[in-house]
Image (cartoon, rainbow, N blue to C red; front, top):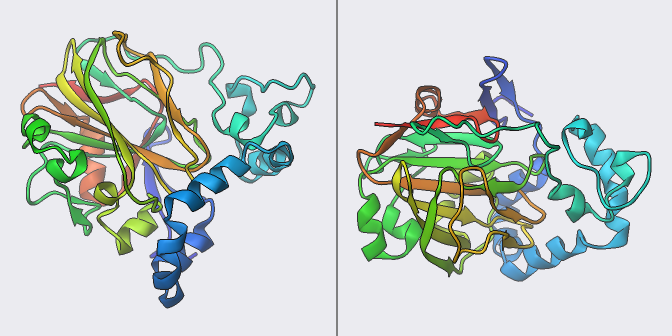
Length: 306
């Protein structure tokens, strides 16, 4: 892979730039950076193709992919709870690929920052961050203008987030695929937006840069204890079988509670806030200006009260 076609991100924990090993990078390049891809992309971005592929990960035979996947992407299973099959080899303990894909962290492996001035990471992911969404905001640096109205597809609700901060958390297929609440609060609105199922990979964003406003997504408007109103948006992607809400949205939530999870496929969570309430962490802002994401563990700081 050439440097131009590679994905570099900043790892907060090593303090270094690292190159991502992309799952399915050949298909991403084929679909989004080739002449045949212009013909094939609408087919693969179709909802039914993605959902069918996602359902295939529930088959008994799909469990056979797990050991190779773990090895290829150097996943430390000591960090995660085993699957439902009672066997000594943990990589064989998952009854299908989806059970492995939505694996949980073992108790104590991740903790949510308890400082009420700190906004903790909603997902184990690679983050872009912007202090203010406006007509000059693009994702990534040479990408598409962000627009809160187009993301939320509700002009009335979008008014609360005009000019406010935004964080975009991209979950790779190799990552923990559950997402969590960042503060105590309650859900005041929620709805589903139908759309396409394009890849959310940065390589795809270079060639189709309106993905966050075109893909299928689910919106929750949250009233939080420390950060005001938040728009919490889960974005579907190619081969994502389903976006599942595991926390009943008619009930209050606590900081760190699981909100839901994505079945097979990488995907994205977008957080939008009210102007002047909080700002993304400085390392995220600095790296975003360089056109690269920042890798951050679940529960670690991604923002602060202003």
